[in-house]
Image (cartoon, rainbow, N blue to C red; front, side):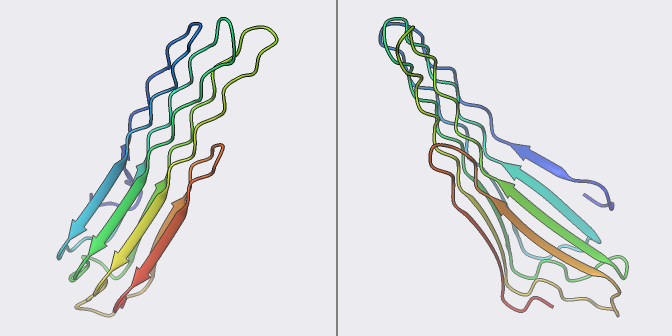
Length: 168
């Protein structure tokens, strides 16, 4: 994971499509995804994007309303402890992005009936805790980013990003 432009992406799978019919089934929920790093590492850059899977599309109604879309998956990133204790250079970039999955669209209804509602958006959490940066040299540019984006849906997902502890 060494290098300025390298982003490691971890993505949840999309939920399954709901069954079509006179009693259509809801879309499946998107997969939850997470990444956790504990303890000391000595990188000059670390960028992760962890995304919850999108909800599946609801089944189409053949004689009535469409079924609801599945809920988006949750995304979580956690960095704990003495994370960057020996950066290789005098610059350091840490970027953690966690978007929750979007809710799946509702299935279509038969003529004269309503589509199903969109599923709820997935939640997103980024936590960077502890003695984050313990350099053994004078540092130049330091960038620490924690970005959490709730998924969109009938009810949008919650988002929380926290940097806490002895950051530098």
